[in-house]
Length: 476
Image 1 (cartoon, rainbow, N blue to C red):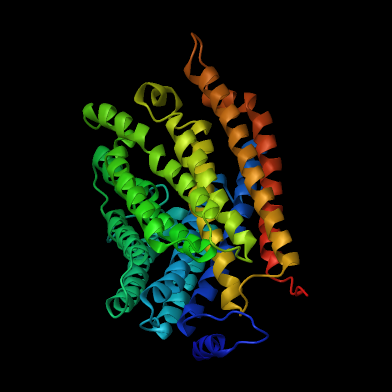
Image 2 (image 1 turned 60 degrees about the vertical axis):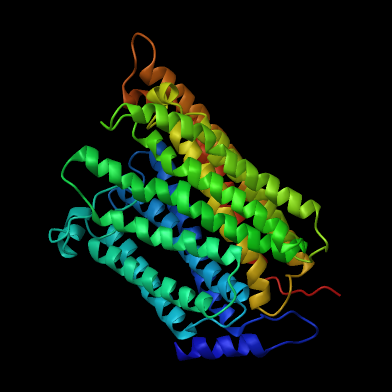
């Protein structure tokens, strides 16, 4: 840990050949978080490809990696790498917005290693022992929290996540309290505190299945369609302030509108998950009405990003970061907004819930809204952490190729899953003689193969993104 802290001091002190430097040395603590995020992102895609093959080759890698384990690792890696990205963004963004050094860089580095080790051990546990055995080994009988989708982490890991989150939030909160308060930093902190608070519902595991599902969505939905949107908005606003030179007041007004619409639509919009779980029937009306409004904040983010770039007062040399910011707005609107709206109304959702249409929405929404905003932040901040305002032109060309490969591949993944979902609904849930689930899967296997091919292209894009940071050729 001492070597990391020494590296932070060096990062802030060094400046050569007119290159940019960090405003505050402690912002360099974001670097290991960003590196871990990208590494776990790569692994998430690898396990996604394994799952994709298991859809069409049922015994692929069985019994070494059963489908349920591959899926668990795939979704858990998604959550953990995004959390690493959010934490890295917080450690970079908050000191600059607060105009002071981070309260405790040593605590931030210590927290990083605790979180990384806990995450790796949890994934190894998923892969090495049967899930029921893992539950026994980690004391799940004392405080049962395991066995629920996305919240499969052992209870001890969940306790560790809470400890890490409290340490992280304490560090950032102390930094803000002693420094400047801005709209961007306050929205970011509101989102991060909300993330931590709603995660506490993962410890509430009632015996009644309806109540279990009801409060389970208080974590899953109120994360991804609530407080995470605040984090996304703050990160996007921060990068746009830096790369466009537009007045902060203009960007902050947009941010206020976006978060207002996010909270208005997202909180009651939780009701679109209550249609068929045994909750009162009025949720079909409330869930449909407010869910129909949920694309609005994402559309506003798209307008926000393009308006700010069009009004820019400077041509920032980091064109790759600008591209990621614009792409984030567009893809978030398409994935979370348009594809979410397609099947969120109760009469439609009656036929589509739990099908590949849901999967198509989930893939594009997570990529467009959260993966892309983290990649935007890394693309902007990492060159500065390494002592330059932007990567070389050669590096940025490779990074832009990675952007287009990942984004186009995700569009095709979404389209192939949508086609599979429409056919699945038709064959399995409509008509006088609906087919069984497994018989239907055989009929849509062609689209699964196409999805797998697109997934390989996406992985190539991830590899190029990583490679772009190792191209050191400098521009003349």
